[in-house]
Image 1: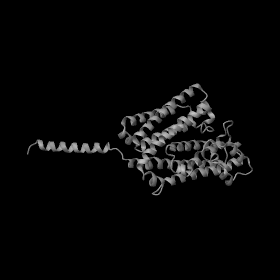
Image 2: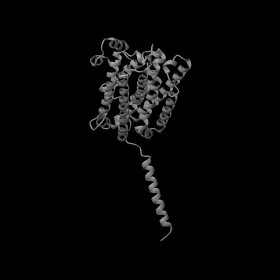
Image 3: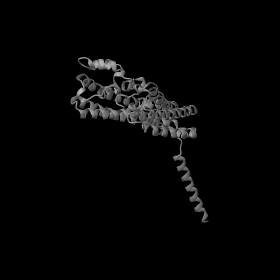
Length: 332
């Protein structure tokens, strides 16, 4: 037998293995795989984290209600900020049950109807019935924020909390946790929105992911930042806590999470590598810029240097929005 034959056979085998491995490692995800990844790797983990956060926040609020001390107030504020950021990450996929079953407004309506809430909290007793009668702008994250941080004109000390405000926090904390759990349940299981709707229509899901990314970029750039820059810091969301900058960063990180963890990035790259790579770089750029925002954006928005910083971030977000829209047109 020729000594060359075994060598050729080994080389052919090696080439076959290499080709197979390369093919597997570079396989383009299908739209079905994208829709499954969105549900299993993005949405459900994010809402599970939200449930955990609202449980901790609710516990901190109940502890504050039982013992309204300075330490317990600070603990409740810290949990509010942590849980707030957990929610803000999810806004890119705040469709489906978040819209149709009103979980979004119940958790995050804004701006706070502070006059209505102040009147309700000034009455002799604050009950579950009075809470239920409030508009959604008097509940959720921002209603709680209004009570534990104070309005824009004055901060709150633990000793300032009234019996009615403590009664409100007791109810509002439990309500926030309940809405988070119901939102997770609405996406879960074989009959939940994730399986029955998202995974059942992969082409629509691909479009919805890009639509959600574009929508979040538009809201952050033109509403959360743009309107505040045009009309004053009173337009900023999470203004009572000074958490607006963290809100913005979390929103943008959610866009990046949807892009990467749903396999949308690889899917889009196969359709248009140039646009996909451009969007990846643009998202990295806007997140880097958002991290440079002042810790309390609310207190610095009148500064010329901060306004210049915000304008640059808005321009970068606008570019990422345009690229997302271009990809949506290409893929759709």
